Image (cartoon, rainbow, N blue to C red; front, side, top):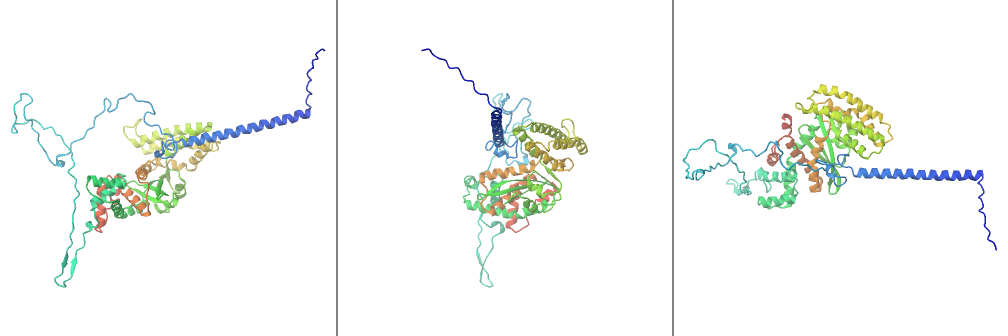
Length: 498
């Protein structure tokens, strides 16, 4: 039986209608896959953007420096990770610094130290020998034994010889309460300026000064200090609306776990703090008034835009961080070019500003206000042209920043033409640094009275620092005046003369 081989059957060719349907099916499949790729690319882009936003730090966003290392990557510091070859300590050619001698009027005791014998021939020396030149002076600063000074007031009942009834004297004003003005002021100073928790204040007073007291006593002293500075703080608040330039910033705060906002408004010679329920413009209406005639310097928060319609200055540090943030997370050509050109113009603008501000000795020589204005006009035009060019960019971040620059163009360059206006809001941000550190230690307040006390004591102590006054000495003065029902010392008198 012979084997037969079957020939393969050729497939029938597809008809034109079938080819058309197959092409349509393949086209739909290709379009579906293309749409899937587009959606996946969008998801990847959004995820990369969210990751980049989360990893931003205070150098590329408006996040506070305290969040660096927690909510974002640690910002580069020092030599940016490169190990320096220099040895620790002073470098060759460095001028040394050492503790100077106190004047003789400040010295409490002088002890002459004579050598017992000659270092050359071993002969014994007496104090009646002659001396040569000025003696070598060496001073030792020491604390005397610290003990609390306790004063007891005794008020006997005195019998009147006329009517035969007993009369008892009232305590002097400074004797009200159980602690004197010095100790009450020290408790407030340790809490506000040194940012010490109340338990640490109690331990310090018990261990160092041997003054046992309770946490309630510390709180009472703190509240009394707040009442004593109420009028100076109210006077500063009334003065705010008359200031020519005010820098403002705000940060979060907590009262019994509830959200609050701590505001700092910085004038030329004082700073005023307030804890409010909101971050809105109504706080500004309450403080500088419904219409502020001066120049308000701030970031681009909506509260300031809604409140102040007059002249203002927006912070260039915030604007630069926005540019760096777009540069870091942007993946488009517009983002790359816009950030490159904006940073170049920013550098040129601030080189001019430093030549004006730093005065003699600055690189390329100092310039006057008139020269600053004249040289900055071409840069202003280039900034305007740059913003106009990218106003319709497909990159939303670039378009939004360009729109902000165009809409508020005058508020970016007010510092060039007005005396006392800085291009950044750093003075207000520095004013918030101490309260933020205190907030992190104390976890906020527990009552509305505590909010008021925090704002008042911050206002007084930080204003004293600005005016180069001793905060502790001022607190002692106002507490003593408060107890004796006398007018308190004003902080505006110093502000008008400094």
